Each structure stands twice: as C-alpha cells, then as structure tokens.
Image (cartoon, rainbow, N blue to C red; front, side, top):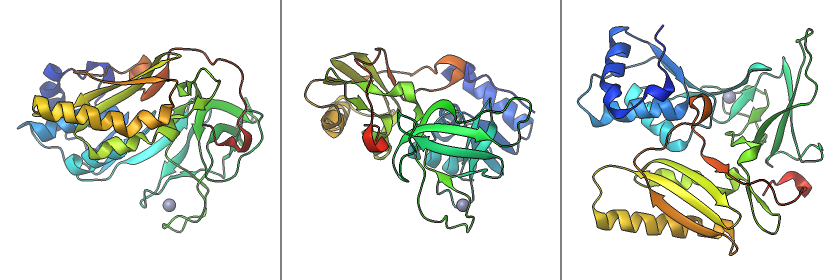
Length: 285
Ligand SMILES: [Zn+2]
C-alpha cells in the first residue's frame, strides 16, 4: 500500500508521486476527490506515465462532476463516491449506477432534518443525523454529523431499494449568511455549473457580511482576453445567487490549498450567523 499525503501534492512533487504509484503497480486509489483530481490532471497534461486502475473511491468531501469526469478519463474507471464519518464509519456509497449514495440501512438510520430536528421531505436539503443500530458500546441516536444533504426519491437504476443520499454538499458551517439573516446553502449555488468552464479548482469564501469572493484556478493556456471573458461569465452566472446586499467578486489564483486534514473546502464563511434562523420545509437556503 502506498500512502500519499494530500498536503504534499505540489506541482514539483507530482512526477515522483506518480512514479511511486506506478512502481507499486497500484490497482486502485482511495482519497479525497480534489487530491486525486490533482494527480489525474497532472498525468493528463504531462507526458507522465499512465495509471490504469480497477477502482477509484473518493470520500471526505463532495465529488464534483468535473473531478468525476477527470478521474474517469485518466484512470479508466468511474469513481465511486463514499460517505463516512469517524463516529459511524462508512455508511453510504455509490453503486455501479452512480445515481446517489446508497445508505447502509441495515446498519444505520439516516434522517435529513431542519434546524428544529423535524425531518424534511425527500429532495429537500437539511442536516444529516444518524442513528447506528449495532454500536452497542457507544450508541449514537440522531447524532448530527454537521453535514448537509438530501434524500433522493424513486428507485435506483441498479435495482437496490436501499435509500439514497444525493451528492453531499458538505459541512453545515459552509452556509453563507446575509445581513438580513438569510442563509445561502452551498447546494443552492449549483457550483457544478462551473464544470462546463475551463476551471481547474474553485472556492467560495464569504469574507464578511457584505462580501463573497469566488477564487478560481483557471485551466492553463488561456489568453488574457479569454481569462477576462471567463471572469465575467462566472460573475454573471452566480451573482444572482447572493442577492443585492452582497458584493460578489471573482478572482483568479494559482492554487487553492486544502484545509485542515488535507480536505478541500468548496464553500466556507469567515463570519458567524447574524441571528438564529429556522428553515421551514428544510429547504436550507
Ligand atoms: Zn444503485
């Protein structure tokens, strides 16, 4: 087994990392999607040795459409997104259909609730609370993982009737807050719209109550005119999500460093909420 520290993925370290993986003849990779995507993008854009894998499993953060496509293209297999928490271990995973994450309902009860703890209807985002059924030493009952997500309706094409979570949108402290006390959920920003644009990485940061900045790492090889057009396009695409009271800015950067524990945070707010808010119907936005 080869362990790669996600904080070690600097550009000049990548050739040696890919060499290590190739020498060890790895058949599968498990890791944060943003970290695996850095390795995959390097392989794709350089004359580096290729890695053809049997399986790629991502976890710890949301698997974006862009990262999914890059990983599938470079490693020759579509990644499986996995959701785990140290308190309840792995409890939701994608099947071969890749239509949401099946919950291991034999072992854990997963509910999506609003801020009052009331379950929301399927398709609506809320806080993820779990009850594990077989942890007799330390039972967790309606334990709030601090993540937000939604349950999917309907049956998965794979035929399994285990309930499914939609793509996870991350920690609930990633909500943005307006002066009026409104909360904007990461899911409500529809950041996957960026997947169609020449953008390698992104991060939305609420700097203060009035300012939100989207940091973008643009794909290489764009002219100054193309970069300017890209900035304008992204601004127009998202400015409506924040409302008039927030100044929304788009800035380019060379690299977005992972946060604590090497995880990439897509959205975070540097401020505390203005006032306690509730979310009738659990729409979370
Ligand atoms: Zn399925």
